[in-house]
Structure formats: C-alpha cells, structure tokens
Length: 273
Picture 1 (tube, rainbow, N blue to C red):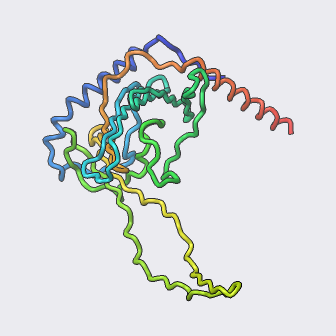
Picture 2 (picture 1 turned 45 degrees about the vertical axis):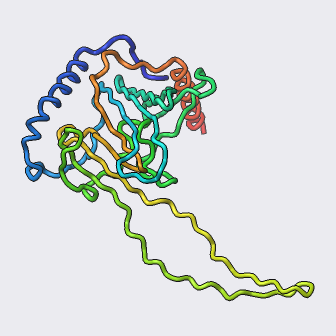
Picture 3 (picture 1 turned 90 degrees about the horizontal axis):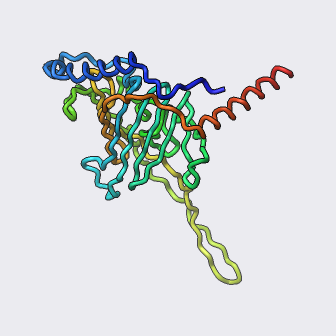
C-alpha cells in the first residue's frame, strides 16, 4: 500500500530549517561576491543539488539570446513545489495549466480530456533522449536535464543574474572531414525499343543533432540559475518554501494503490513457483 502521506500537518521544525536555509543563502551572497573568481575552488560532485525539503521554485522559458532560428517565443512558466517526499509541477503553456506529480521516481499527470483519469508516465532517464535533446527540464524529479554537468564541461566562475555561478558549456565534437563519394556509373536498359538511364543513389542517413547546452549553477547552493539549450533559455527563481505539506490527489493515490496491489500479487505468484 502507499505509505501514509499526512496532510494539513506542517512540520514546524522542517519549515523552520528551510526558512533559515533560505535566509542564510541570501545573506551569504554578498560575502561570496567579494571573492575573486580565482579564489573560488572548482566544482565537485554533486554538480547540481537536490531540491531542499521543503522548497518552491519557478522556471521561465524564453528564447535564448542570439538564437536566429526564427522559432516563436514559447509562453511557458513552470512552478514546482517539493515537500513530504512529493514534487508537483504546474506548467502553464498558452494560459492552460497542466499538473505533473512525482513520487518515488514515478510520474503522473491527469488526462487532458478527463482530469479524473490519471496517466502514469515513464521516469526520465539520465542521458540524452532519442531526439538528441537533454530531456525534460521542467517536469521531472529534482532538477532534470543537468545530468551532463562535470569537470569536462566546466569553464569558469562568472556572475550571472546577480549570483556567483559555476559556468558549464557543452559543445558538440567537431564533425569529421567529409570525403567525396563517387557514384556508380549510370546503367542503361532498353525496354520496348526505349532506352532508360538510371543512377544508383547512396542511401540517405538521418543524423541526430549533437547536444549543445550552457548552464549556470549557484556556487554557494549548487542550485540551478539558468540553462540554455535548443535555442531556449530556462531561468530558475527560488521562492519562499511552502507553508503546508503537499498531498497526492485522491485519484493518484488510487492509481498507486492499484499498482502496489498488482506488484504484491506478482511477488506472491513468483514465490509459489
């Protein structure tokens, strides 16, 4: 069965710790800013922190500066809340809200045509997606899309959006030199007195666009400040922590209970073999 998830019973000690952490991060910013970049040691794992418990943040998606693709600017704003082992992401796109919930590395969202129906979603993996993207940056456990951070991509310490940040840059490897491919000589066929000429075509190949990204991570907290990829800029703003604990909607609790019951039955069947 689903572990008991209490509601309407805030934990004063946890909230007090979160508030103290929030105030401490704000107050230590000026002290850190007084340090020269050369005095700040390079980053070490983990390169991006786990969201504090409890915490709340927003992610604004805008067109990246210098992008010349001509694509329209997306109107997307995500508000994420984490508490009680749960994470809730509310994505506002074009004035319409869509909720995504994460619990125990499981993700759920209400169906578009019927909010009472719950759709389980595959957990995002830590690696590139088949389409060559970083994956979801707004609706996964923790801070998804930062799996590529490492010393091999670390550049320097910079000031970005008023914060002292570790700057990471992921650039695609240089393309190999192109070699000229000689086509086979044309062949001719005579059919019914008519001469037909054909040339063999080389098979077409579909290449996935190489990954390219840039990220800024707060030196003091290791929380994300911004990430740029695919012509878009994702900017993170951390808000005051929530004052009450998250509670899974009843429909999602029912789906989890059903999945747990099925899992238990499968385990019992395996034991009988």
